[in-house]
Length: 169
Image 1 (cartoon, rainbow, N blue to C red):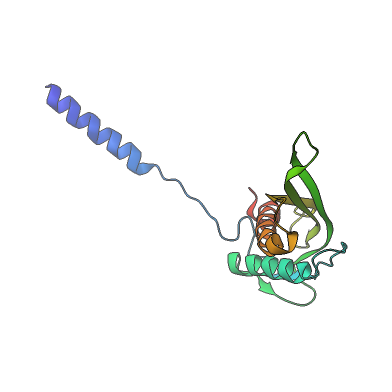
Image 2 (tube, rainbow, N blue to C red):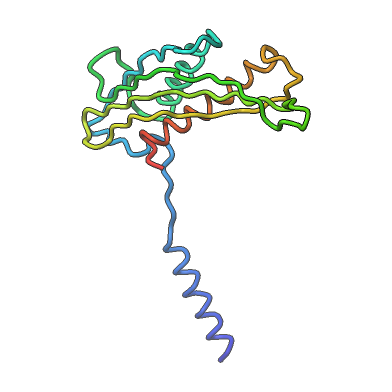
């Protein structure tokens, strides 16, 4: 009798568990592709005097993310989604200051202002500044680590922008 109850209990539990499913959708997020089909990403001018290649690095990463992760077609005008903005901050600050007032770490912080306009879906617009930072050893010259730091910061900010606009996280 105990064996029968155990077997039936296992059958019921297995049936319940197999009926449950979890579904994740990572590509395209909350875009309604029935009405939203095109995107235009404007060049983000660098309003800081630092790292002249920043605009190119950021623009390429942002476009790549939206084109690869969505089914939107990139157009040069009259797009359903418009993304524009500017690089507004590039700041170095000392961190981990010792008692002799010498910083052992330096923090590079970058800020980017983004205007996201979805002309096809109401209440989807975003107007926000995104920031990210990386720290490096103060004994290292900025020029020797700047390219890698910028790449990491750009990837993080692109993730934040994507999540805030179309991923709906």
